[in-house]
Image (tube, rainbow, N blue to C red):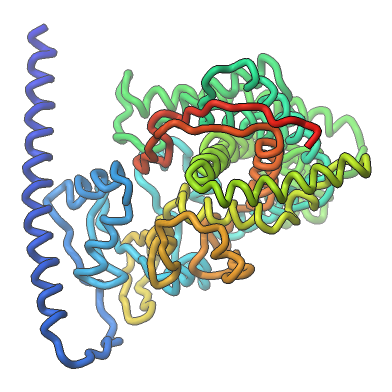
Length: 509
């Protein structure tokens, strides 16, 4: 009891210090902002921005903790981008700070972000918080560089974009969505965040390893949920800590996935049968067992490497895609006009298919214009992937900003997506804005899937999944959502998992 009393006292002291530091910084920072705004109001001449090169301005905050307290505090508000906005007002669109134990240069400029993402000349390498590096390992897709990264990215990207896969997986997604939605009829309260995870995790595990419903899928999901909890946490590996538990869960996952990879490898060695690969494991194994002249030029991918990266590729099925589905439901719940137009568009497609007796194709779903606008607006407003971390291997000058060798750079997507210079009324859910913006997927100001050499290879599959979910949801149910809040730190999620009640729609419409 005495031990826990000491621990409690220490925690209380730390919290009080954090509150004092946060209060002091907040007041001091507000005074700076007020002074700067007064100075701007007094100016009567237009000042031309200087283009002379130099390290971006900013503050590294307090020793050790830097500006982390304010960064985290903003993540628990409805406007997490306020951390960036304060400093952008003080120092400009590119500034230096110190968060999560790292001195870092933050870019809220879409042009600077583009240079960082394109990474011509391999100037930048991935640089993520220590807990992510520890958990994913040195050979993860997120951290690998050079030819190996390009090779794996091209293999997985080509497979996920292939019309053959999209044709096959469309039916599987449809069946999984219908099964999940069908179970809602018997539920008084549905928590959308949990229900969408059931859909996306099962679909992705099937794409990666051809595992269907059953005990293996339940085991994978249970262990993966334990594993992913440690992505953003204190980098301490003592028994009982969050990172330790997550690393143990990864060991169990690796054991199971490696067994699947080895069994598939043996089966492939016993047959000369070629044809289209049925899943990601087969894609990577086939590349490892290329013809002899190719094998002499490139090293085959070890089973441990394949297994670890298969586990990493499961992250979108547990985090990004289900959250996009969940937030689409939330945003639509508060915009009846958009929901009505979405329902009308999808009801028309359903009517066409019922009259013709034809099955849905993946192109049917992706060709619905307003549905795609709703998805684009959801991705812009949700900012599930709020930025990428990179480290400069040498000094580089971008638009007059010097990024010194060894410094980390955070290319902030959320700041760009929520900037009034790029989007009118950025905090408003407005799917119609995309009718004016057109095909903005290639625009520097819209990067929900990243960009450059590391553009998410599964972006088309993600849009297909969300499109199918929205189609069957809006043509099956009407719903009422309870009040809920979005939390942005450490990852985007709903505070109450978005509870809704549903009413079936008459099918003879």
